[in-house]
Image (cartoon, rainbow, N blue to C red; front, top):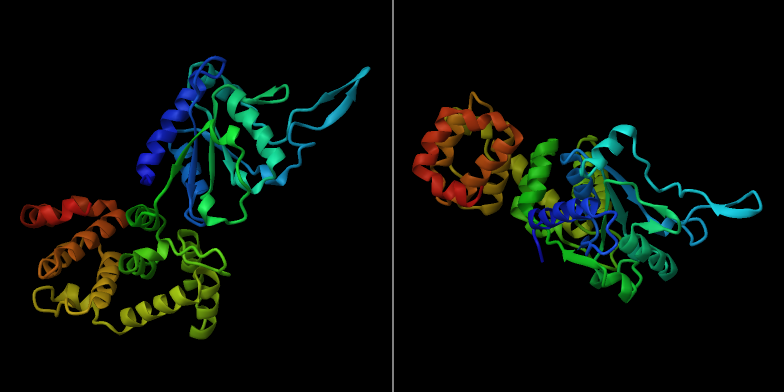
Length: 353
């Protein structure tokens, strides 16, 4: 099992190597496949990885093609027949071609859920992975291949991958990471109710059940965040959320929200940080308070929040609250009071940063 950061480091090196040795038939290409439970955001992570490197990404779902059309449609030309360039095959712009000729990676071809395709299609995919071509059509210069799919053990609508294809891939299994999800959630402004709940229930990211109608996952929580913004009545909201993350986890999230709504006033805690009661006795209430504080933090009240957090018996709660607040608003890292906090409690914070 690998963390997302470890896996993406390998993917980046793989893409660079593929692009540099695109025309070397003897090159030992390393093509990576990321495997994880359904709903963990494998494909979106790869799209983000391409974007961060200035490359274009194109998603190829081979299960949507049949063996006749995937290599390109056959048309008559003169006295014979030729195959047209497949519609999924990317084409470089003049600017991309110039960058590719300079050795840059300009595109990531992300092959999504290849095991959902029939065996014949996976056999054709093996040629693309091994030779960078399908039939007579080659992948453009500067493009590299990466695959993403569910784990075989999930048995989530997957077919057995042929041995000759599997042997050509570097398969890396991803583990669901709380910090990776929270970094994404804070970046996109996800509700603190979701981030606080995931802090309290890390298994909410990895609740895959093969026979379930719905299960808890990063993707399901992302959709749940959208539903929370709809302003539905409690019963209707519960039904909609259960359809995203399963009835059991939806009930636990509802319980967490009730604790959040009935806990003490975080605004009062910020107004009177030296005297307002600290919710150390109840872990769920502590998670809820920390989630609310991280969401409310501003440059003006951050010093008061740090004063309040110093009073927590368990400083790991304070550490992740500060981390989440700074991830939501990076400018908080420049508040002078944070330096004073680090001098007295830096060890707890750095261990959880």
